[in-house]
Length: 349
Image 1 (cartoon, helix red, strand yellow):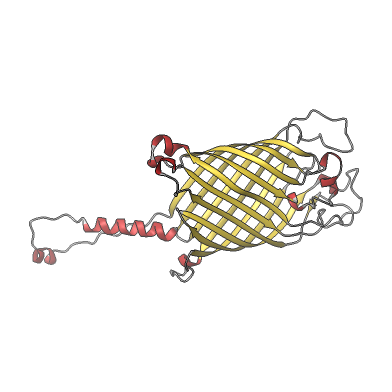
Image 2 (cartoon, one colour):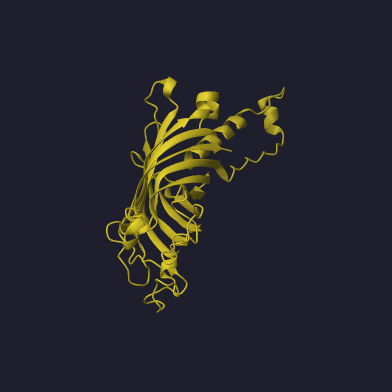
């Protein structure tokens, strides 16, 4: 993509250079006149900047250990940019759950009489950056057939919430991205990664909590933070316009993503607990209607998108949905497996 933008910019510069002013002087006169060459303007640091705000509503969400059915309102900001050597993607979202997934102090098993709390709020952010090998080495060696580029990937995730569980996730990822072209301006990215979740708090493992142990590092975590084993991950994402539709219907596109994260040791981190399983966090398909293009024309394509998606989550947070206590007992039964409907509107600004 960066090469494409550089090519456009270079072509523009060449066309501007060709448009030099002409006068009455002949070629010989021009050759004898001292002329100071004008510097060629540098390309902008960012070749593309895209910022969007999303409001969405989710039905059928789950909260491990608490409920297997809740709703969520989602407010999210997304930034994407292309620069000379790669791309940057950043997303931060606020999720407001329904009352069946309550805020602290509700959902404390030791104080079941506390009820009526409002729905919990969670903030989740992630960043992914790529550096393309074709761009760094000024080559096309990493392009072959549908393979457009190979890139180095680095990123991180973080979250915080006001549930009684008090999760506070921190992880880093690094690896490669294989970027493929799809028809109709589409793409498909495959990212094999190293994944390390080095901190994620849990009230239930906090030393001093009534249901936790008393020996730090053995039966409880001194500050409640669980540190998991490094593992593998594969992240996928794709996008494609439905360009095969009749022109009167070419306002639709499909996209999706999937993340597969390997087992990371005990669900309690450094202390004994049920072993984690491979986690699958996916939005296999999202159907998007380009409302702004339909109303105002091609010039305003994807300024306002309305979409609907199916979301799938298995072994949520790595918890074994068939054997973990949080996933199988009481109100938590079935709460580590999610199949939900997700719909919203996204506005570019």
